[in-house]
Length: 138
Figure 1 (cartoon, rainbow, N blue to C red):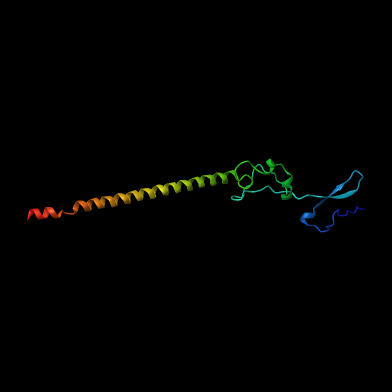
Figure 2: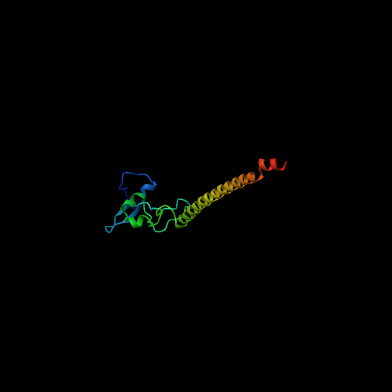
């Protein structure tokens, strides 16, 4: 007859957190060992690809790991992959370049406006006839 086995913990239902495995001991008894859940590797927040260099453990076990197993030593180390970080850096650089270009264009427009107004004022001064010259002719 098959030997009966009992759960070691209080939960008697077949749930994801109560997975067990039958093990035969050296004394020829059958006992149940509780199996821990397998941890998933963290993923990138932008592209959802797996992050390299970070251990795959359950979330509450990260506090027991060494710091070098929890993160990668670069900006956005434990949350973004290298490609997404590269894209962010390039995007930030291009935004700054755009700001500089806008500033230069505004300055050029201002100088052009000032030059145009100066030219118009000079032309008006040249066009105005002198009253003295008219009176001397007649």
